[in-house]
Length: 341
Image (cartoon, rainbow, N blue to C red; front, side, top):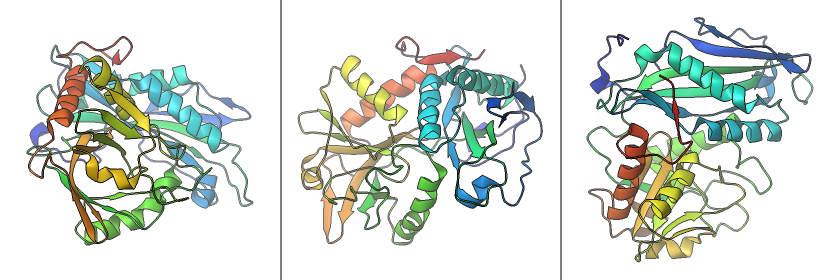
């Protein structure tokens, strides 16, 4: 199969329209059979529920070309599970998990010419999403929905290597107790935009959000989970009912324990103990792990021993092992790799 004529090595992390996307509509209590379409546009009534009350959720995953030339996706069944949880919390009909994986498979297969070649550092980003599509003026759930999947080729998140970033402890709250912080709802990300723009204007790369109830415990950033390494090489991630359950974080904890022989802990992490960690990173689909070199907590700076020049040694091993699994040079646990072609 001939690839598209794209300068793969100079791709940014931005949208590029591909040939096909998947669409399925929910009406009269059931999802239709779904189809692939070349039309990238959506036509909605001005009173559509998604426009009035933000009834929408989404997922994000990637397709890769492996070392042996296959196109694969990484753990799409977990994205299907997480979208089902998001839909339930937002009073939306669940798109069946097996059909979710099938839709992802079909869209990647139809856009195989856009999957970057092995060794380019680029990948095909996959965005499944769902929204309330019929007109709603009273505050209530929609009765009709649309589930869609599109793809776009993207460059490596870090051009020229992953340099440690500087983040700040944010004065704004990301999620309330018993709210929607644990689901991938569009409204959560809208709420974080003001804070991230403000952080960038002040010279920071990201925000660290604390729990809104006590403001003593580490939660996450606007779009990634935290991962810490202790001085005795224990991998620690914060646990909270308002943190989005990251598939990358879950995979990294497994890699730490089963591939690298490290002790792992998923527990409450208090801000007061952050200064005692040896390494810090942010984990998510886009970058796998973004190393953090410094956290600014108002008038106090926390500088990690791993420094501002490169990833710490444990985070580097975690990154290399997980990306090695994704790209096919390291054998994956059963069920982690979904082969497209």
